Every structure is written in C-alpha cells, then in structure tokens.
Length: 215
Image 1 (spheres, rainbow, N blue to C red):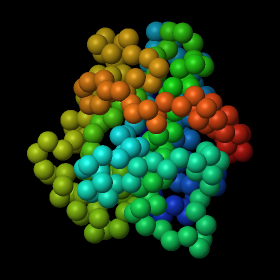
Image 2 (image 1 turned 30 degrees about the vertical axis):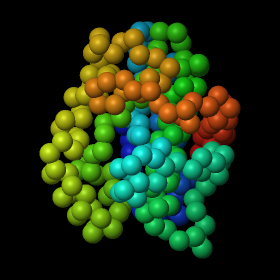
Image 3 (image 1 turned 90 degrees about the horizontal axis):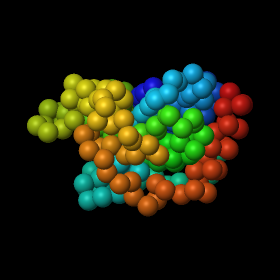
Image 4 (image 1 turned 90 degrees about the vertical axis):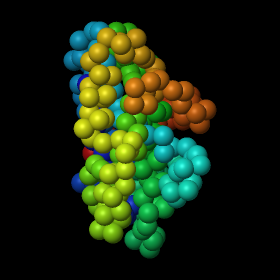
C-alpha cells in the first residue's frame, strides 16, 4: 500500500470538507484514514509506504530558499484551520506542509507498533520535485518559477521518482525495511532526532483517532 496524496495549500485558512486545515487533511489525515480502513486486509508479508519530506527540519539550502521547518504543536491545533484574521502567506503554508510531513514520520513509527508482524512501514522521500502539481494552489508567479526550476538538471521529477517509489513498494531489495525507515530516493538515511519522539507519536495516534471519528 502506498500513501501518495499531497498538496501545499497557499492559504492555511482553507478547510477540507471535514473542517480540517487542508494541507494536514490531505497530506496526513487522508493517509491515516485509508490505512486505518485497509491495514487489516494487507496480506503478510506486506508493505506500507508513506510519502515523506525532509522539510520537517532546516538545512542550509532550505534556509536559503526560505523553506520553513516544522513547528510542532498538539495535533488538534495543527488540524485547525487558521482564523480569518490571520494573514495567509508562503511562510504559514510552508510550516503547515512541514508539520504534515513530520506527522507522517511520527505516524509511521507508531503505525509499525500496531500492524501485524509481517507488515513493514517505510517512508519514501523523492527529493525536491518542483515540477509536480503539489503547489497548484500557489500564486501563478510562484508556479511559473517552480516550473523553471524543474528544468534544472538533477532536480527530481515525477518520471524519475515514480520508479524509485515503485521499487520501495515492490522490490526485494527493500523487503527488510520496517519501523518507518526513511528512504531518500534510492538509499536509507537516518531521520533527525526531532522525528523520533515516543510521546509525540502516541499523542498523534490518539489525536488522529479523535479527528477521524469526527469526520
């Protein structure tokens, strides 16, 4: 099973049909809903692969490009759309995206503790892929810039990343992966310490159940 839905809402006041902030609803809650409904039907041995991102933490290049890292709060707060008086913008949008991707890592670690022994949980990071339609709600000027960057050699593209994702989901090379192992393109990397927090993982699991029960 692969959880691949993604969006980067340009306005964190925008809500899903269930009333949750759109980025968190699509990039995290939708995956948790689908997996919660279907995990019991996955034959063993089986794999659950979630789409992650390194934007949850800052580095030189993301700082240079003004890509904000996650600012974790209680999941019930993260799921709440911004108030009408709050100003939308790329900073708030980026934080919402990074929070959702940090949630994916926490969820993957906790999910492994709940699925049957023969099911492995993995997180796949395709790399920076500005040529996708992830930012379809961004201003036209920003989308034009991203389309230009997508033509730079070495930048990830759907055509390159699709087969890598399929490999993680299907190939014997990755069959041993468990516990939310983080695969960057074609190799395993260690998630940063902020992405390993048992208290946050347990709280996210509980809060997710509460949020989905309201939907």
